[in-house]
Image 1 (cartoon, rainbow, N blue to C red):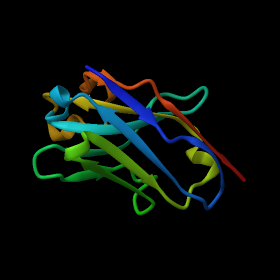
Image 2: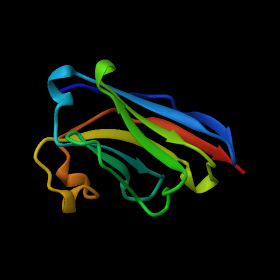
Image 3: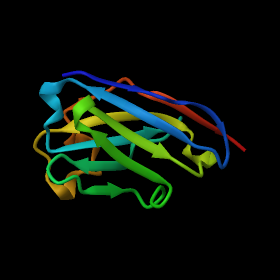
Image 4: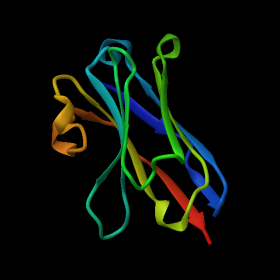
Length: 125
C-alpha cells in the first residue's frame, strides 16, 4: 500500500494551494479516500473525504466552502484544492484510504487503513 502526498508549502492568508496524493493502482479502488491534518500539539483531524463509488464528497465544517476534494482515476491521484487559506489551516496534511469504512466513520482516523507521509502547509497572517 503506497500513498504519497505532496504540494504543501508556505502561503499567505487568503492564498491557495493544491495538495496531491498519488496512490498505487491496487489500492485506489477503495471505499473512501480522505485528507486529515494535524497541527502541533493537536490531534489529527478530519478535513475531507471522497467515496470511490459515485464520488460523493464530505467536508469538515471548518473547511466547507473553501476546500475541494477530487480524484483523477486515470492518474490514480487524489487532490485537495485549498482556497482562502487561514493561519489556522497550518498543519501537516495526510492522505489516507479506507477499504471498508462506513459513511458514519469517515471522520475517524481509525477507520483508515493506510496513510501517506504527510506534507506541511503553513499559512502566514
